[in-house]
Amino acid sequence: MKNAAEYLAQVKALIVMNSKIVHWTALREEVQGDAGLIRYKLMLHDGDQIEMFEYFRIMDESLKVIKYSFHWQNANVELRIRWDNAPH
Image 1 (cartoon, helix red, strand yellow):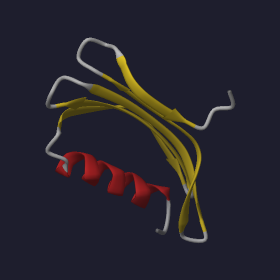
Image 2: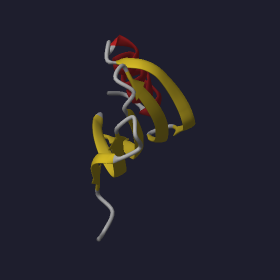
Image 3: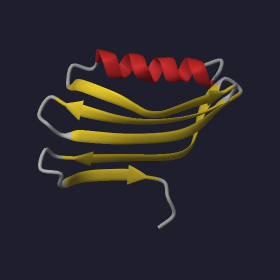
């Protein structure tokens, strides 16, 4: 992977190709050279929602995710599961 823009394009392509995702919104996107930040909201076919956040860098043509959180909730706004690397 050459830069942050290339990774961002790959993420978007995966979202668009996934048949379980019926709608998605980019809440925030920032790309500056080898660093980037994405925050998306995904609506799944069953009404569930996923909010995803990543702050990342490309180092030696490899992806390094610095911070992340993925929050998945059902159609009734009840938490299904959450993944993150925030200190607890």
